[in-house]
Amino acid sequence: MVVTVVAVATAVGVAVSGAAKPDGGIDFFQSGHWVFSNLLGTVFHIDGASHNVDAQLSLPGADPGSQVVQGETGGYVVGGNRIIEFGKSDLAVEKTHTPPADERPVALEVAGGPYLVYRDAGQVVRLGDAMLTVSAGGKLGEPVATTAGDLWLHHTESNSICQLGRDADRLTCPTNAPSGHTGGLTVVADRPVFVDTSTDTAHQIEGKDLGAGVALGVDVPPNARFASTDVGGRIAVLDSAGKRMHLVDTTPAKAAPVTVDLPDGDYADVASSGQSVVLLDRAKNNVLTYDRDGKPRKSTPVPPSKPRLSKGEDSRVYVDSADGGHVLVVDNDGTVGPVEVGPKPPPVPPVEPPPVQQQAPPQQQTPPPVQQRDNPPPARPKSQPQPKPQPPKPVTQPAKPASPPGAPPGVKATAGNAAITVNWGAASPNGGAISNYHVAWSSSAGSGEKTVGGGVRSTTLSGLSNDVTYVVTVTAQNSAGRGQGAKSAGVTPKSPKSITISRGKTETYNETCEAPDCALIRVQAQGFKPNTRYHFDPHANSSYENEGRTVKTDADGTVDFQAFHFGQVGRTVWVTADGIESNRIVWEEG
Image (cartoon, rainbow, N blue to C red; front, side, top):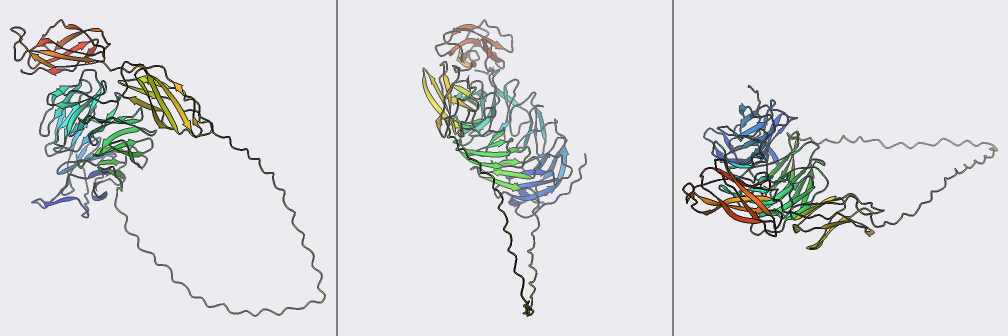
């Protein structure tokens, strides 16, 4: 494939390291952002610190809508049909590549990269001097990466969690999420974490193990999206359907989670710029920023299009318009700076005012002599105009005073894990705009109330007790006060069923299962019916057979026991009960 390219580089304000190569080239810092303008057929480099365009490259052959990523020495214009590689030191095209799939990849700019992840096709491309394509063997969730350059992937079908090391040429899959559970990956304190939305827990990936779960304290839906990195130690969770965002602390400090009710919109993506959350509302073409405590910082419009978020290696978040003609730069502290992409117009010279024409003063005119007339006729009196009839003034009716609003219709409460999601319709304002809705709950375990804005139609009540029935009442308020409340049916939060296994006590069972490789399997189950007997069966990808064991749950519906001798090193083992499958572990040497 031959591409004819004309390169034009500006020499003003380019962000460079200051060190020249032996061949006279210039090295760019790993900062800033590249964007392709469809209208101009040109790639522009934006300096993240100054929010200015400082370099450009003409690429008339690039696909419209291409995204641009950068590595250590090169940039890559990624389109649907080809990937155009250019040098950052000389701004000249070097070669083209054929993408492995016809879909828009997720791009990650990290050390040793950049990476392109084709999620539906299960393909991973590492761009650079030695381009590498790795097949992941199935559909993938949102990828994440550490600053060291390790890429982490979640197989949405098998629930395997895999790693592509910075210099590795193949994937390793050290651990699994529990079978049948939903969730996704993020990075907290530069360590990969799996967020299990079935159990509302966060698990740090520790070598070959999925760490112990830390309760999120909020009900996270299966389709929630997570910022790829933490926001000042908190995980940003976007619930698009519920129009809310959760900021969850999983550190040892374990601060209470923060839930933010978002304005009405279509929230397509979430990202972290370090200490701030960046949300993209495609319905109103707005970029919203919040601090780590959920306080709003700014709402910034972008031109009508389908904008996209990307995070640079400099930790800034860049928001590109669909045509590449407009970019927003979100700094670490949440400051937003717009950048108009394109060449600057030439300065307009000042216009000189036209000279003032001097005019000669007017000459005095001698009035003509007045001729006297004998006996002038008397003047006729002028007739006065008749006044027009005025229409009668309308009678203004005094405005009726506002009265308290009506009861909100359609109050519905849906139970989750230690939480309830409440939805309702708009109450009749009765002459005064609805200013707030008050959402109260009551149960044998206690009661409380939460206030949200007048435009909100849904909220989540978290921190509740499982296996306790709650009744929720929603009341509207306007300038005249609170109206009549509307109640939901009783709902009971439940902990979802889950089974987690790990290696237990090392023992010798018989001549085929001897220490140190032989050990019991530890089984931890929760979310089952209290004081109920369940049969647990072990399984392995080998000829292993075991009749299982029946155990009784405690008053909280949990059980923790050790059973099932196993010693087949290298084999995968798991446990099932009541239709629930546990996580799968690969048995290791003792």
